[in-house]
Image 1 (cartoon, rainbow, N blue to C red):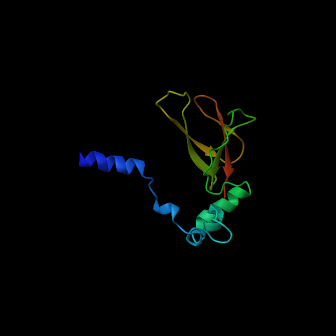
Image 2 (image 1 turned 30 degrees about the vertical axis):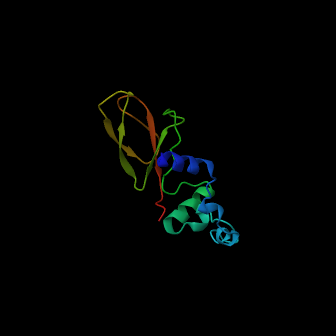
Image 3 (image 1 turned 90 degrees about the vertical axis):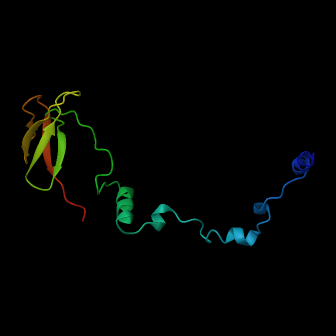
Length: 128
């Protein structure tokens, strides 16, 4: 019986939360005069360099999805490299489990010996 009375009393009386009592001065102290800083304003080091490069339309650390190419002689798959040759693996068919490996040299586009897709080696500078 006493439990029911206590429950009814709790349900009928309005409950005041502490957050409603917070003064305006303490709420203003949570943010600066300029407001909450953005990710760009807070970033430092490599993160800041990457954000600035992305702002200018560059992809310094190859973070974005690469552009898709047709693989033809006119539009070959681009393979970045810091040297003059690179070992490339081609999955000739989508569900194929065997990878065809071949060396790709700097210069004109080269064909995969199995499926005929074209690949071109492009010199790539390291960002740092």
